[in-house]
Amino acid sequence: MSNTQKRIASALVLGIAVAICVVYGIKSTLAFILVFSVLAIDEIFCNFFKKKRFSLNYFISQGIFLAPFIYFFYLDAAPGLVSMFINAALLMNVLMIVYLFYISMESDFINKFGAKFPYLAGIIILLPMMSLGSMTYFAQWRSLLAILLIVNFGMDTGAWFFGKNFGKHKLWPKVSPNKTIEGLVGGIVTSGVVGGIFWQVFFGTMSVQHFLFFAFLGLMSQVGDLIQSKIKRQVGIKDSSALIPGHGGVYDRIDSLIFLAPFFVTALKYFYIVKA
Image 1 (spheres, rainbow, N blue to C red):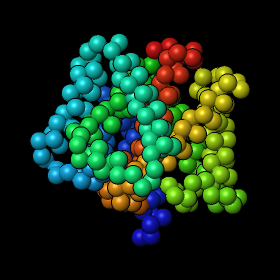
Image 2 (image 1 turned 90 degrees about the vertical axis):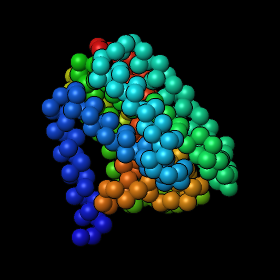
Image 3 (image 1 turned 180 degrees about the horizontal axis):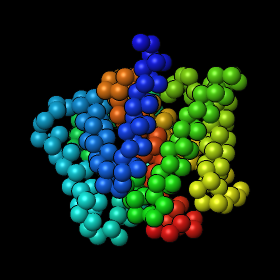
Image 4 (image 1 turned 30 degrees about the horizontal axis):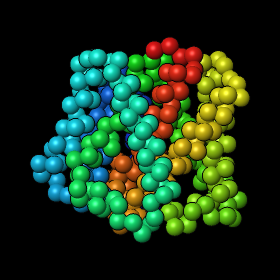
């Protein structure tokens, strides 16, 4: 089986699994998020930070995620406090953007950070996943989750198509040699268009504001992808693991998605007329 066939087969299996969980209900969707989060923390701890699995810090990092996630979403405790995690996730995104543009490629920052604070692998996943999980508080959570996934997929697909067919100018060769400016622009436009179309389909409304917001999410998806590319280059790995055939690891599949989640949820809460 070729790598392309593996990618397609894995994507179909994951897509079906997500669809089943979402159709079945909130608890099954949260369970899917929980399992993916535990696996992503494992990849960050062991492969990014190069620490031993099942050590004390490993269990601390997993506990940092599991305790609040289960407390807030499975025990339905203090849902109003979840916004605290969303705000923290936004702050973490800002710090990661600073890292992307202001920390040199030659820096040993990630290795030093991982050596000193390996248990913070749990925080890296907890904050955006709390944002993703909080979408289940909205009455239309299935539609909203679908739109977020579609916008993220639109960015990837648009960037690939326009980059492959029209890409002539490299975006940032040191960080991601294959990305082009044409691919970036094409992906952003694709995200705006597909996001706007599906917002119209699900909610019966569409405006320039919606298009611009989904285009912004497309841009943030690319920024999130660049951040992870830079981190992987600095720690000397190509993929977060080999768990998903043709795709790499769990973290490779969700890195840009979880970067988008805090922006999306914040916009839903404060700027869009969508009732929780």
